[in-house]
Image (cartoon, rainbow, N blue to C red):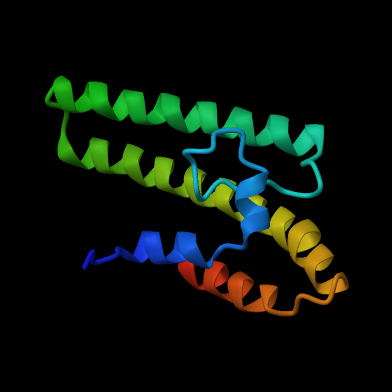
Length: 122
């Protein structure tokens, strides 16, 4: 008998509708928003992600250059704060669109999902 990982069990719990939206049939956990993110939000997130990637590449260079630990940690803290802000923006969009839409459709179970997501950031 095959022992299933937590991820595999979560994948099975998604409805069949979730995987129908996936362009790549090999992808079993691929879900898409019903409402598109605004162009302004998408651009803001992309800009922020590019900045974080740049920061992390800088940290990588600092490690290669054997830079002082305190300086490296300061840059890592800045990167973590930037990633957290991106997460906050996406969570807010999720609450304002996906969660609201699901509740309007009668799926109050989405509140449990939202609470789990919020707890990840506490």
